[in-house]
Image (cartoon, rainbow, N blue to C red; front, side, top):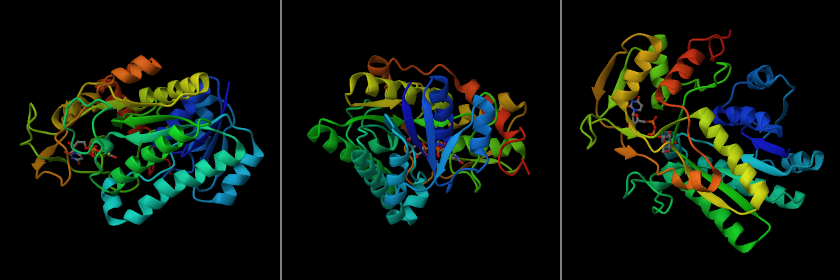
Length: 339
Ligand code: UFG
């Protein structure tokens, strides 16, 4: 059993990772500023795990707060989710993104160093590949920033590489997520942005509930089988399990790794819509709209490295993702419905 600090642990992927870490027997403390998480998440995590949730409220930008967190408890490692993640918003507020994602990381690393904690799992993204030369994409593909958000993830990876290569005390697990989707099987936690969702699955979910009239399919003239964008969707519970494996590898071997977390299987927007329609039991309305600026035709992982290094393999399929999302969004706990 290890003692883990989980920054951003009340967010979408962070909360699922909290459950996975607890199930693996670790003792987890959440740190979150609740800027993009619902305040009832810790209580719902308690319902899932059946144990009290230790949750500290504060920001990874706050040096004093972080010093207090590390002074108050001995941690073996940090799993670091706390960051901003909306591509469009990053174009409008680049400095906010650079501040939270890069400065936040550095502030956290400094606090860890002072406390003698040298293992960290880092949330990176397939976005670091920009428009990939090769699809499916291996970890060796070149990194290209397409927007400030992508820049911050490339910069974060670079910071960790420099530290890891030059200071042998450090070891990092860098995880490049493809497209997380779905919700926890309990339907107590999931993704439900308070604004109109940017991402495909939460948008379709709102169409399914009737809150939004139809899905706009951004482009049907891509060079893909049905002309719509293809993504490697990965169930958020599989993704959460990937963090447990990454952390355990770090604790066991004290050696850095950098891996894609995906399934290796791509689905188009229309395939996703059809799967969600099956899950919710009715054909969901859509219209074809122009391409969205900056979109890539296909993102798909080569997942082999994560399997070889960590023993990671996604187990849940697209129907599992859609069913769990629908159970969550149509249940009593999604935001705006628990009132
Ligand atoms: N799409 C629609 N209509 C919508 C929303 C999305 O047709 O209303 C399409 C997009 O054009 C794309 C696919 O659905 O083809 C997936 O779009 P998402 O916005 O869900 O996901 P992206 O792949 O564009 O972006 C996600 C994350 C980014 C990350 C990127 C690469 O949001 O943070 O994956 O990992 F950078």
